[in-house]
Image (cartoon, rainbow, N blue to C red; front, side, top):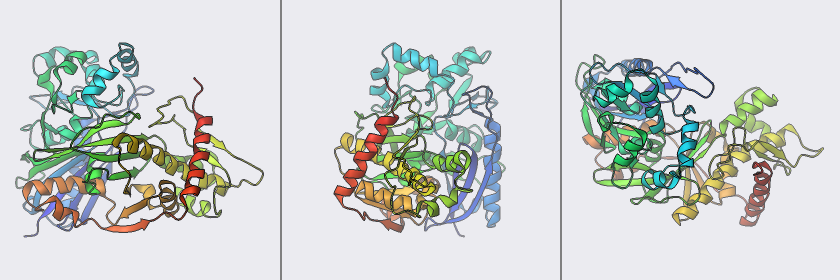
Length: 495
């Protein structure tokens, strides 16, 4: 009987299920969007039951589309939107409130008060994170403080917390298993990335009972077996990683210093920093990449707020293209940017600047500037922002970049990828299988059950599609960088 691995890719706007074969090739895919709730400005919520029902429906569609059932599944791997916070009743499984999404900013003022108390270094030294509403801790506290009865129920041991991975495992196992993995735990602002335990001082600081917290496991082991009507036979749930860490593993960035960039609405750049955490001096996050067996790998992470969304702005804001797919052809109409630089700080600037008040800026305009120059400058702005984070990572890690592996929608733009290679003065590699996030979860699950015998065996499956090598001299690259830095200087908010 043919055996497969089922990967659940539970994202911010949709749930997906992908079935992989032994070669790491997707053989079935199903996807379903679910509702986004915006109850107040800056608030973003999901219905946890709809997350589960959408995930359950795509599981059924994916496996039925190729005529297989639970007997054909060697294991299930889960990758998920990170930081999103769900609290539910330990007996009934009923959520006490909607999921508070990672994008939600309702606890920003409380985060400011923590900074005012001088707690930035205290929290960062334990968690590797900056104080921000992005992470789970302040979201849990908000639910306990604002949902009637939640605080007393939590203190009585009646409530459970989980990020989306924990919620899916709970639902898949019929409430038998309450776990998370180290990669997701490291995004809560409650997990000590050195001791690999929930930090009692942080739990006390945020007023969160330890009875709520899931057991923290490795990223590749059997956590439990399914107990749902989705499968006639029990299937082991055996791999968990947050989406960006799963993509790092799916890209086989398993050596220290190896880097991947996911080009989506924004960009998430992660560097494998090896078996010791590097606390950034350049405004990057320190996070856990994964734990396999007894070995923990850490990563440095940098976030770019506006990447692919700048192309949407060219379409919807400026109207110089009718569809996002037209941007490459328009930009290719000119041989270079004509001195035009576009810093796409449309929602402030992320790492390494962290300037929430920065405004977007297009500089270098002349009578000779055309729509093609602006389109090209917009694409180049994505590559320049990536370059800024790579340089910060190199300073933190003390290692040179050997190559950059890329995935995500905008990685299919050849002009952008070539320019990325040019400004980094290094090779940029796009893989044949671009479903790297789901593939990472599949690999972690498959390794746990012996579907793949070793990480080395999995590494052999990774296949390059296109390699982009630098086509300009280092002097030309340096001149471009200098002009970019000057453009960023015009963009940053004046203090």
